[in-house]
Every structure is written in C-alpha cells, then in structure tokens.
Image 1 (cartoon, rainbow, N blue to C red):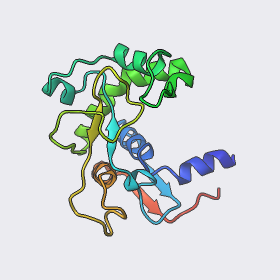
Image 2: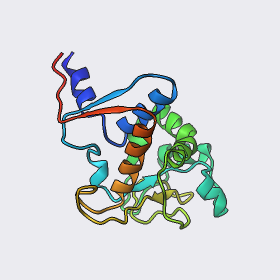
Image 3: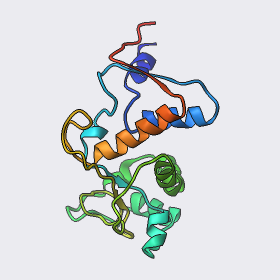
Image 4: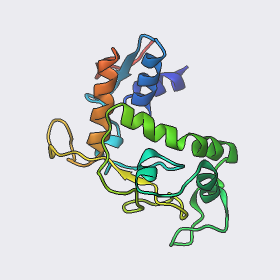
Amino acid sequence: PQGLLDFVERIAGATGLPAAIKAADAGASVIVVEANYDVGGHAILSGGNVPLGGGTSAQRKYSIADSPDLVFTDLTDWTIVQPNGWPDYRYNDRAIMRAFADHCAATYEFLVANGVEFKEVPPDNVGAHSTGNSAPRENHAFWTDGAGLGSPSGRGGAGLVRSLEASARAKGVKFLLNYKMKH
C-alpha cells in the first residue's frame, strides 16, 4: 500500500534511526531507504532539545525527582497548563501517554547508549514547551562543527541525528539515500 511506501521512504529521522538500531540489535538485517539525499529529516534542523524524564540518569545525577507516574500526570491532568494557559497533550490518547511516560527514561538511556551526547547541565525546561510542570525534563544535544555538510543548520539536532546514524552504521545498518520505494 502507498501509505507503507511513504513511511519507508521517510524513515531516516529521529524516529526511524532508533527503529533501525533496535531492529539491528534484535538481529535483523536492516536497509534504510531514504527519499532525501541525507538522513535526519526535521530533527537534523532542530535545536536538539529532547524532553525525556521519568527518572533518567541525568535527572538522578542532578538529584531531580521524577517518575513515569509524574510524567503521565503532567501530560494528562487538565489542571496543569502551560504559561499560555493551554493544556497541550491532554487531548491525546491516554494509553499512548501512559506508554510514553513508562518508556521515557529508557528512551533517554537508549539515546546515550547509542552515542548521543547531551550538554553537561541539569535537565531544564529551557527551549521546551509541553514538557510538564513538575520536573525539569529538557535535555540538550549539541553539535560543535557548525553549519556545513554534517549539519544544514549547525544546531544541536545534528548532534542527535549524526550520533544515531553512526551507531546504526556501526551495527551494520545499510542506507540507500536518494531512493524511492516503488515496489
């Protein structure tokens, strides 16, 4: 079906790269087909701010109390609003929010284990929105090589994407760039 082909063609971003890594870790032979000339999608242009909490190693390092239940409450409790008065994620499916909350810390640890480096500062809410009000959860990936071939914007998103790409390649993931799936 066309929907599946569209998904496969756009896999090499912040969601597809970890999926490729997990598949390779599970023993699969993985080929990433990307319609663009490079990996990264929107993530490579982003600031690299990653809102993950629930008790990450970074939160523990800086004595920040957090838990999956607190993440879930922050993302589903209608009495908690952002400074602009919006309840943001409260419209989302509660089962999806529960799954996100329960896997938040493990996702952070997965990123670190696969080479993503975050600034050596306590998690905060700087540059973030909709991360919850009960605990600081924003982690900042960084990129030091400036704008160029490795990063169109020179921003932190390249640090996230290039680290995941390197991990995927080291695990045997093959990339077909500038290809479209037709059949």
